[in-house]
Length: 114
Figure 1 (cartoon, rainbow, N blue to C red):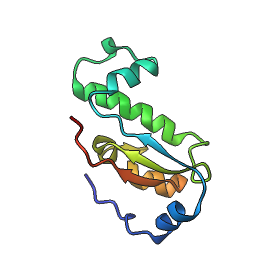
Figure 2 (figure 1 turned 30 degrees about the vertical axis):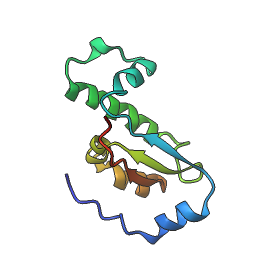
Figure 3 (figure 1 turned 90 degrees about the horizontal axis):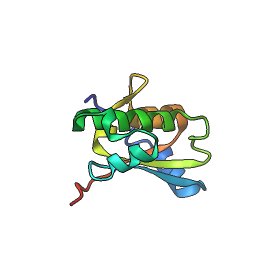
């Protein structure tokens, strides 16, 4: 993907150190994704492979991220799965969109699960 130019922003450190709010976990990986989609109303027959499944979960996350309530006043950070970090929201890399549009600090989930 494209390089993200916001990762050394000192405002992000202040956001996490000084503001009240919570960190959203938007980091479901392959094992928990079918259940997350099912709870969101998307059945397993809506996709036929992992790429389609991850595409649907990214669309779900993008809708959450774009919600007016998902902003730096309430949500100070968001943990992102690698595929979400590599994706885009409205044509902008997800991490860049989170900070520039909502002042939500992006965090990359670094484990690969079991």
